[in-house]
Length: 131
Image (cartoon, rainbow, N blue to C red):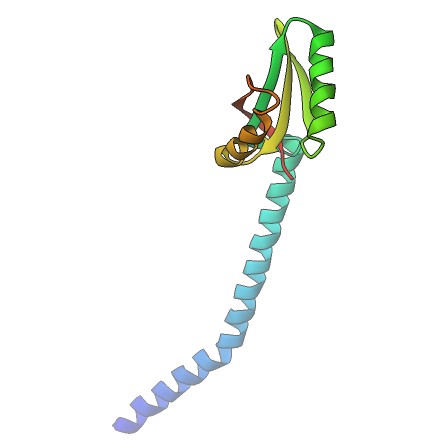
């Protein structure tokens, strides 16, 4: 009576061992599909958000005079050319923003350098361009 049990056990083990490569291949295929789906979702997200994300910038100027805002932007660019500069109109002010900082700490480190020349500058939250 022990023989039928052993033969069934051996047959079961043989079936499992034979199907393992097939299961592993399916798992690998599923992983590749998931990775492709994630890449596609990221590409779609970047397309919808124009490659922007939440982050921080430093506001170095705001006021009602467009020419003054342009002068401040040019003065800043001459001294700190490593930062991107942006000018916006936020009714009723012309605003000059700089940088694309992912964290507030990163923005704060740059703010300390900038405040030497632009003492009224401060950190603002906004949409930034991903680097």
